[in-house]
Length: 149
Image (cartoon, rainbow, N blue to C red; front, side, top):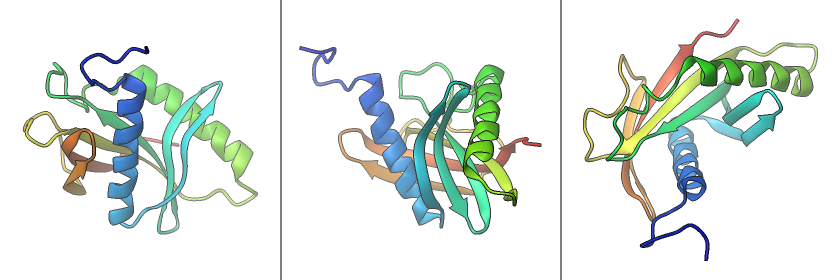
């Protein structure tokens, strides 16, 4: 029953596990998680958090060992555009008169043994986290890499 074969996780199950591990990683970096999987008709935000006084919207990107592209390469302009629209809607619906300082971060994840599949550029933080049912994942946090007006 269902779409699992040979004990493999569905994409949705795998996504939930990776996002939960990303939340734990972000918390270890000092973030306070406010919300997960904010969805609007305009787009989705994986994680909404506070980093000090800054309201941070985090896109989590994961690619497994067999992936041809890296997690960073999987983030295309359409996804970024939809995320920005969702951020605007979130701010309009959830913030009061004072507009908070806002930042858009990307949290990249790949199997720890798949070196070279992470992100590119300078990372603020990197860590390996053992994720139940998946194994060790390497997380790389890129702060403020998506421009937001």
